[in-house]
Length: 165
Image (cartoon, rainbow, N blue to C red; front, side):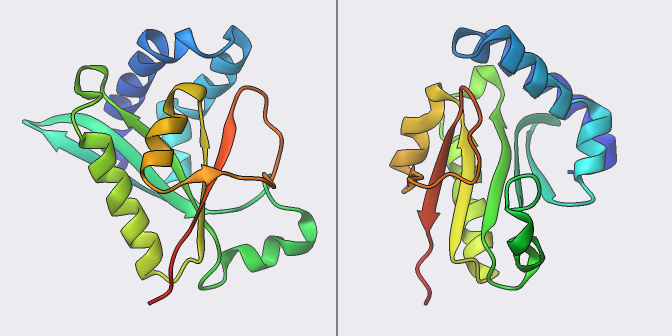
C-alpha cells in the first residue's frame, strides 16, 4: 500500500463496516474501529507496519498488514524485545471488498502474510478477529489464543505457531 492508496482503502474498509460488521459489533466498537481506518490513520500506520493491497482492474479489493506486537498489546517489560528478529508478528487490517468476500481473495492475502512472517523468522503470529471471521482464521491454522495480550471487548485474539524450517 502507498500513501496514495489510503483514500480508496479507507472507503473499502468503511463499506465492510457498514455492510458486514454492523451485524456483529456494537455501535461503540465500530466507532472505535472506524478511527483506525481513516486515510490519515492508514498513512500513519505505514510507518510502523507493512500494508499490502490486492488490486483488480485498477480497484483495490483487499488490504492486509503485517506488523509487530507492540504497545499497547505488550507489557512494558517486554516491549524492547518486540522488534527483534524472530519476534512475534501481528496480522492487521485484513479486509476484503464486500462483493469479493468468500471468493478466496482474503485467504490468498492471509497466506501471503503468513509466508512473509515465516520467512522473516517469526515464531508466532497473532491477530484480532471480529466474531464473524473467527472460523475463517481457524481454517487457516489459527487458534483462539488462551493467553491474549489484552482483553478487548467484542473481539477474539487468535494465535498461530509457525514451524521453523
